[in-house]
Length: 180
Image (cartoon, rainbow, N blue to C red; front, side, top):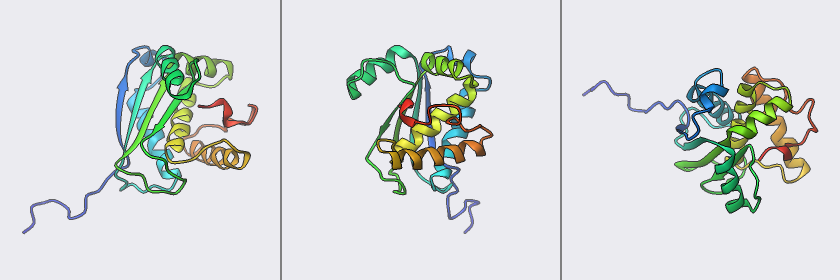
């Protein structure tokens, strides 16, 4: 009996839970945040080798410097805001398949806005870059050593190029240490 449903569920990528805790994000970004989050998260997942049928969930919170500073102090021992915090649900190595919940990303609007201005980048491009960077952290990529940083940066650059974003490290100190 055919009830009109496919025998194989077709996924379109990770499920995203978006929470906007700072209304000023709407004025900072040129397009709806949800569209840009989806675009960046899906691009990062695909760039890291996850297929469109991946069954995992990512929580993205658009917050402010005050809240991110408090989380950074509590979880990382750094009493200052940072552009994005990544909280993986479970430790992964690059190439590992994620579980049902990949993790949480929390972004600080004022820090992102200041960095974009200081680095002469569009807030939209910097926003999507930070999301790609954060998703890669959730998937086990890191930049603690030079070889890890080189691998992560190369992957970020390739993913961002697919989104039409120029190499964010080209005119920088070429270090992912400035992120997260």
